[in-house]
Image 1 (cartoon, rainbow, N blue to C red):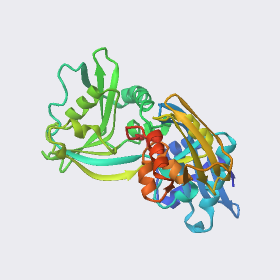
Image 2 (image 1 turned 90 degrees about the vertical axis):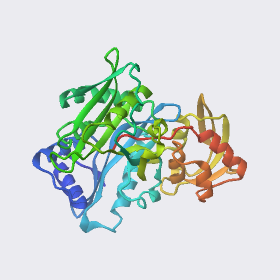
Image 3 (image 1 turned 90 degrees about the horizontal axis):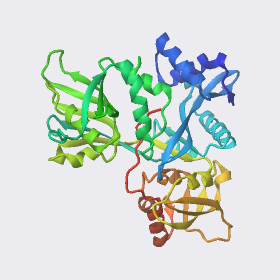
Length: 400
């Protein structure tokens, strides 16, 4: 196991693309190579060749209390097709988590290709996305003509200039979202965006951007009157800007419906509709999986809805420095987490993956207890639910 050198980036991408069956043209390959080289790629080597790949983006995660915590955005994880089932992935995870811990990074996050892979390495699903469709006209009348906002269509260069700042402002308010990496904007508004992508900006009366939508119109035939509005990304800083964007998208001429994916599990739009059944959820799936690399540091960095204390008996065989009993004392104004003696009676018993799932309140302590992933008496479970609960679901708008 070792870092990838600049001369090995090409081989790194060869292994990754072979594992996933990707094919890139030269322009895409050069762009991807630049992204990988700017981060921290490393590989598992066998017989002098790369057998597996992994890297991480230097990110920040918005945690309860709207605190910003460093997070490694784990990505480009792959094992060469001829090196499977030989412990390569485990070696990659081992090396990466050891490195993150040594560098003092308290959290690691990833998007899991399969739900059964990463739990054994201490990752738990922490945010959830929904996909849905909405009939044309179902959102009509949501925007007030005097709400102080107006819409403007912009081109790709203007989108590249304006949209990242809007997202950065919004994500710092949204528990579960992360600071993006530059390749994300290439895929959304740059050369990596699908053909026909359009950019809609919401501005306040002073001309300040307050939200945006990135979307495409997918038509049955070129001049057909029937089409779907495919919303790839929508961010708003205010409720009025949010409603104005959706009102416009859901009433475009020569369209039948809006189709959206990667949206919050509990999309607020549903509660604004006259007929909430018009928003039909077509899928709910996990998005951000979270891993506490440094348990006491991570638990100390978030805020808690209610004042209280818990003794957590944490099982973490993959990162033994986290294993043991920890005294968590926290509330709305701050928190501390420190080692507790083995003679101290635990309030809850749980493993690293369960901690990752409840860290952002994406999964409730009560549900984890019912599932057998958290053990404790009813009073301790209630106390933990009060402390870890946020009242609003976490959402990660960023793929990486």
